[in-house]
Image (cartoon, rainbow, N blue to C red; front, side, top):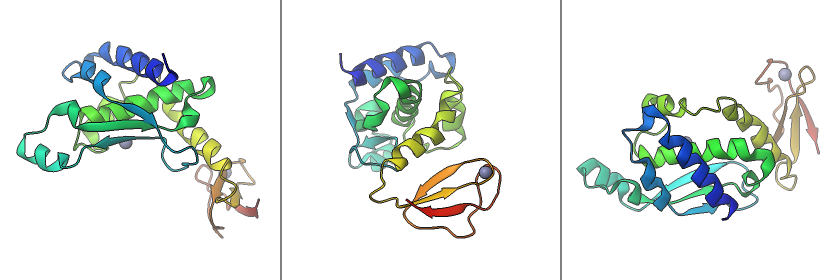
Length: 176
Ligand SMILES: [Zn+2]
Ligand SMILES: [Zn+2]
């Protein structure tokens, strides 16, 4: 069993035990092909790609449910022990997109997303984002560091006067 299949089976079995998802066709998620994003990707952690024409079929009510998903791709660096809790959360998030096409990140989507039992996993989003951006020194040549709380953000360009997202202190721009 590949790591990806292992994550998938784990996430689907947790989803099957969540009461608030029992009206969705969770077991159909096993049909969705899984893959990985390009290794150097630093903006996306995961993506749910639909087949062409899905939005028209949804509007007409002729969509074929989960079969409308072409594939779900996860960031390859999620497939390690270090990030496994966050990987589960990302796949859960993409599976919800597959089950709730057209909902986007609306209130219905967020309500379902909040049912994931590992409530701390979503907090790893920022940390993983920083981890994959840190590695793109070739493109993200600047690091914005908060002198107060040590928050760092990797960027293509300097951002003079930028404030820390966490504590609002003015960030220091350093070329790396
Ligand atoms: Zn999303
Ligand atoms: Zn700060």
